[in-house]
Image (cartoon, rainbow, N blue to C red; front, side):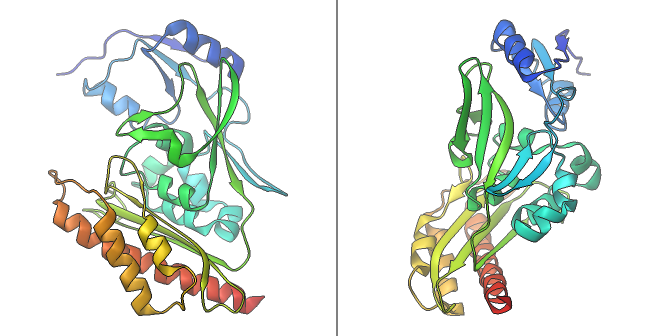
Length: 297
């Protein structure tokens, strides 16, 4: 039976206090947000921090705030709040969609957006959605505040580019562009309960007239050491007449360019096949949404 080792526990009342505590406690200190992953790893003995710094008493870190230039997501915003948010459903549906597919309802009620990205799991559901939306991560540390693209935060399985004593505080989403469509799909062993065997998010902006894509972003999870931007698939659909055959070709390219591994959950071959299917499905859904948006305007 695994036992928790003794650790120091802190509940700072401000970001400044949290940063000071993290700096003083050193590399063995960890931030506690939702705790759905960290506490499990502690109980099973996979991780034993010297100190936990609980951020839940810091006011404002759980807010979802729309503004003129976009939307701000507090790092402690619950995944269930993203799933239900009217603003996200209307303006950033791919993120609400991804949130609804993350784990079971009890997990979504505790898990936070900051914890999901800070965990740096290659199987993250939220990371592909945030990446296709071109979101930025705001972090605070001893040297002040930094703004980092989501893709640059995760450097490998469980590792990030955050500097010592830095804390994720929020996410900045730019205002939605016109004539765009988005979609996220995932494949797990148990529908809606398991982390992604493969996940795929797509974002398309149609050119005037609606026949061609002016911009495209495609990001996959569980196909490499970090969420994977499928550049070749994106380039395949730009400035060409969109049709089912073109989207199928883009999906084929995505299946070729990823670098999945075989593990106890799925083989490399299975992940490539699943990636092709999910990318085609996500691109098709994003295209249909963009056309519908364009028709309404």
